[in-house]
Image (cartoon, rainbow, N blue to C red; front, side, top):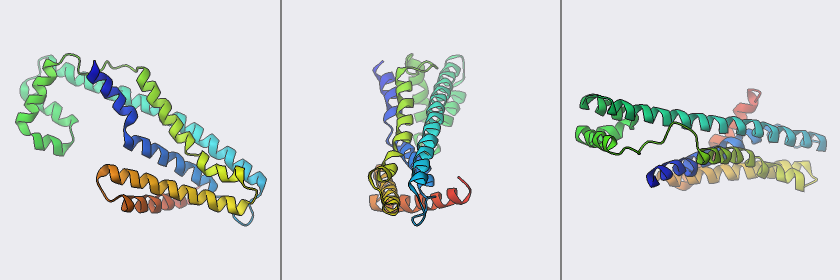
Length: 220
């Protein structure tokens, strides 16, 4: 039961998922703030932009949370199907092939036939290693976390428009905050991956900026 609990919690605490959700929400919000003109933006345009940005991220946060639950359920059902197949008479060679399919290709090649056979036997021996193919409270907490990450990514960008009366300064500050958060996200991902953090930060900031320009140009 302890292993099962740790497996569920890992989905919620995955740093890659957390950072990418923040990046996604940030990019969505920046496509709205990026459409404002420094020279001509009015308070009414700012208000409309803030409402649109928040509404868009609310909608996408909800959609992303639902997809998180769906992905979790599909993965869990597939794992149960794999274990059921192994236990209902699959020969050792077929069992090893099934396990190799769910492992990263390099990992499957590294462990070799002996490693795959050891995994097959352990899966057969441990009756409670796979979670039931249904959603639990931790899964819904994870979905809520996904929703909040996407939505909350909007607020750093709109704070300057709330706190400042000068539209030009608010736009520049908002864009600066967006680039800074993208840099931090790239730094975190690169550090997690074992790469050079500053290179990851610069790459994410540049890539994010190009994506925002492309999304705005395509009418997003």
